[in-house]
Length: 140
Image (cartoon, rainbow, N blue to C red):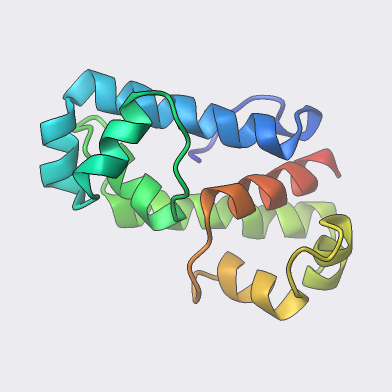
């Protein structure tokens, strides 16, 4: 979710990209501890424990950013979230695609207006949705 942290996103499937995000989240929980992540992130203990176990609970980008921000070596959660969304916005600009093209590229799993609201941060985006959009843009 941070620049340069995930290589070859366009060459992976959205599921592989989502799995890679999950691995970074699990590494964060492992390195700082479940209690620290829960107290610093505000994310429910059960979800944090699920992440630590290597499972991939349904998370919003905001919750994932909060987990990452529990690591004192990382920026705060809002910065991480905004940087991640910036990756999508810049990807759309670089690939010269609009939200309609993204919707078609995602087999119309989301409506163009919904994609726009999520990419702009006006509506919550799940990590799975983020991974799908990120992978699609990088593949272009």
